[in-house]
Length: 112
Length: 113
Image (cartoon, rainbow over all chains, first blue to last red; front, side, top):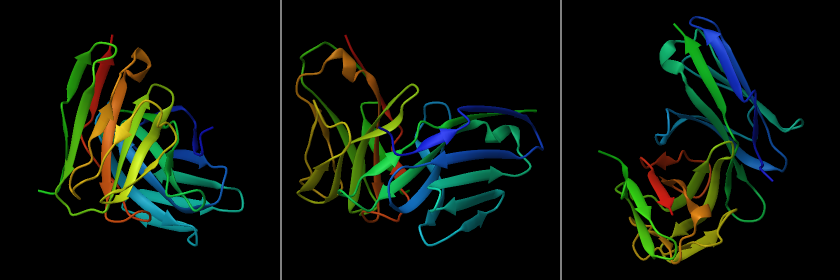
């Protein structure tokens, strides 16, 4: 079964609004990363948060990590039409090898 | 320019005909990985490599082989492709095994008929 699961599966908002996506995972992790994918193209790294960190910012992005709840959230503030993409969380496991597990993603549509 | 390249970008083949998808990175990265992406399932890791001659299975390795003879190259081999291997494939690399961002190639869309 998948380690990371994003919620919601799809999100449609107006330009200027904030978008929040959530990720839950099942087992212990070393790091959690968020990636963005535009329409079937390669993924682009957005932000990495380590297991001993609780919050991280990068421009209009804010990521939180709650290891007790095994969950993370990605907040995009003041969304733009160009933010329309799919967003994935990825977890680096700290048991059973050095796998990276991706969730199924959240599709964000920002209406101009 | 730092990049991960994959070839071919598109491939249509028939069941049982061996094929190789090449992946190359120019960043001297240790860690390389192959993923497949299917609708509704996100990316699933096929194989990864922590360095030359060191490879290990991901979550969905059945039907695939890899090799890492040089640091920059990590080809994915399908010895006898089947229709359930029709998918979008991505190669990725990162500086080290964990805790570093992965750089993704542009993807290879494979159709097996």
